[in-house]
Picture 1 (tube, protein in one colour):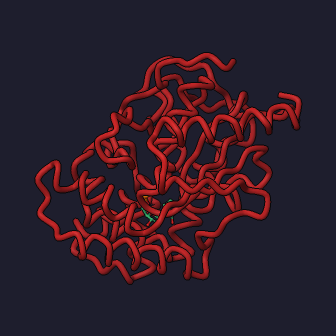
Picture 2 (cartoon, helix red, strand yellow; picture 1 turned 90 degrees about the vertical axis):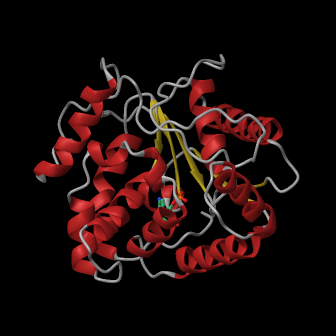
Picture 3 (cartoon, protein in one colour; picture 1 turned 135 degrees about the vertical axis):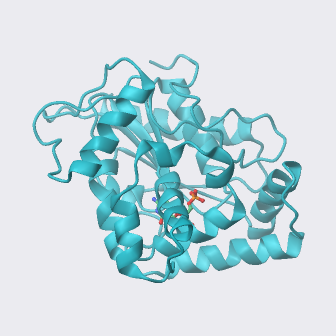
Length: 284
Ligand code: DC
């Protein structure tokens, strides 16, 4: 199992999280993801459509939602913006041959939908409707999804309980695929997959994270001053950690990984060792 492989999907490129350190693109859905078996029908047509369409778009199927009690390698990677969690999650998914979901994209898509319809990000009903209507087509425009504005919009709509409820089952079903999955976000280890056998909370100093994100955005032509980037990061941290619904918080049983002084290789190696220790502990 511990054989380095190509990422299962290279559908969406995201922030590298480590500036110009040569991070591979992050994956959203696995190339062979499908849902089957009982318990996968949410009763919400649009959600099931999203699940099925994602599988179809990505090709052949292999994974199925697990109905048995066999433990599976669910790896929960949480942490604040530009901590490197996405890059680490992507690398872990490639290494263990697991599907990977970048859950932030769902919130980004919902936020962009509200903005596109001229709505107010503070309007809980409008934001919930937007989240309920997210389809795979909303997850394709990489440039829009990874813009500074999308991150801010995502953080704002993510504070509405209705938005989180709308996106909950999709993420939980993804986590429960037979064989396991890697998910990164803010509440994976606490809400989406509280029983995950591996939980990482990835962080770094705000200045380091702001610098990484500043390099990424300016590198692709977005004009932004470093101080504004730092203010963005701090404001987003406060909002994500301070909201009432599923706040960003380290799970009691998560391992803290501070990447301030690490490049992606060092961070991935540290994360891989955490997973290996958990595999021994849980007998995977
Ligand atoms: O990981 P990201 O930067 O793409 O996330 C964008 C925003 O989405 C983040 O500021 C908060 C929200 N989010 C969330 O509330 N829960 C998640 N599991 C993932 C993202």
